[in-house]
Length: 295
Image (cartoon, rainbow, N blue to C red; front, side, top):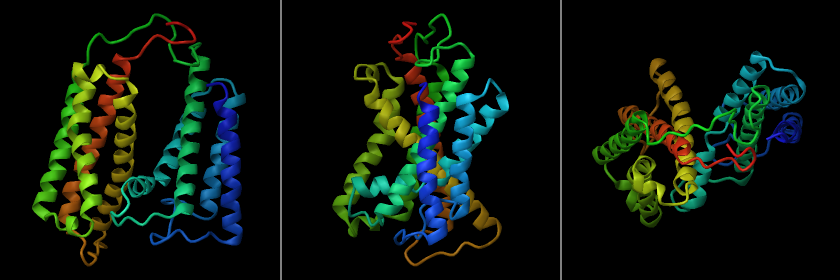
């Protein structure tokens, strides 16, 4: 973890140089969507990179200051909110033919933004661990404490995730499945993953049979899907709420009605948050002794 602040600085400077070039010479085409990041473009995107580099550099050299840690997490949040469209890129890459318009330059820009978020977040964690006299690798400070069994709140979270998935399915049943006629093979693959991620995955995180497999087999998808759903549909909920409040919603041809989004988006958000919470509990319960400090 000691290398993460420097890595965050260097990555922010490299990505920031690209953003400055685009701000001066003009950004390239980002495909049909027309954007790569949400809320940040031009000089504001370059400024976000500069803020990330400055905070990471301060974390690397400064003594313990809680406001500095808060600033690091604030910049991390801004970076994360800027790249939720990366979820569409991943779906388009895994399931070609779904109609989602992938664009390589936009994908690389969003991926670079997410990498900076991860590096800066890791640097913030290392900063806190260093000044708590904790192991930089695992974060433990003394006696190793691991829950003996899955806590009750994790069960609630897992079944909340299933409830969110089920609510999203009910909304789709009410709307119909006409999209299957356009690209049946791609959407059948999507629906298979949809069912597994909404039922088997949250159950595996809280039931004993989910611990009989390598721990990152459920943890990786749980963190990735839960985080992607939470960020993407969290930003979407804000956009829908603003459009509803200001009466600027316009329904495109073939688009679902506004009521559908007010059901589907909160359902996705509940699904994502439930997966994340259950994954945290699974991570704690199955955590092995640290390879560095032995705790």
